[in-house]
Image 1 (cartoon, rainbow, N blue to C red):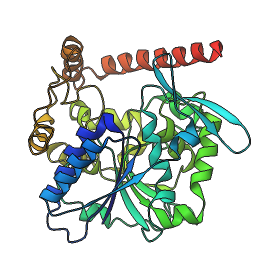
Image 2: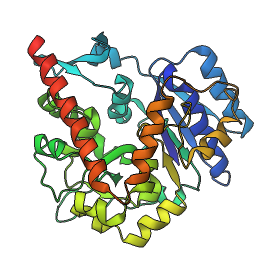
Image 3: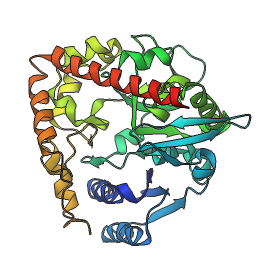
Length: 354
């Protein structure tokens, strides 16, 4: 089984927690190769990560993602991460919003991993693995629905995506949109079709509108070629507060997932994804699934790291919004709508200043 992460120093602690949970929950896996695409991890943190692996009798392979800055020429712009993408024909300035540009590194896994690695499971650093991943690893990626070509990857749907995102990606409301936090990727097919070049070129076309960067590019370019996984393999913690029917109204394709499968994922997720604002490393976060992160953090060299402070009041209000979501989903929708409009307006304002 081949696993890949992408991380810089800012996420090294969370990467350590995820790796610890991965090894602990897959102790019976004889062959477990873990690759880390290193976009700026310090030697001290690399040593700590290696120490975690050794405690489980495992090893890590670090691969320097040296060409990321050459491809994206990272620089800061008005407090936000920005980049310039070289498409081979012209340079396009990209605003990567509130996301760290290092997340874009997952697009280059096929180029950086050894040629013999023909399939890989990508995990975000802010995930915790609670169950064996063998069943996920063995998911078939044969022919895509209604297509002569096969699935390139498998992922979990994100039905709460904003309509505006689907619009600029040319997607219909009934088309599934997937989260890129957990991806089962057919690297052989990816390499054969030279998809790295294609996804970079596609991203250059949508960059000025894109709110979710490489995740948007993967959804737009690979529409119809991503297989739907059970939400248990990438359970977003805030989905605990959503009703199944609410998610299906937001994205009709979510009905491909039986309601009982969704309920089971909520009760017993295999992979928890701490997406959203209620992240357990923040002081004041009341994340229902936060104990899993705390348990594995205590098993790492970062166990005494204090929580991030400064957002306690915001997180209290955020949790209040979570609690009213099952009863008044329209309130959550209104808040989300206001948020995305603010993001779009801010993006337009930055574009006008260029």
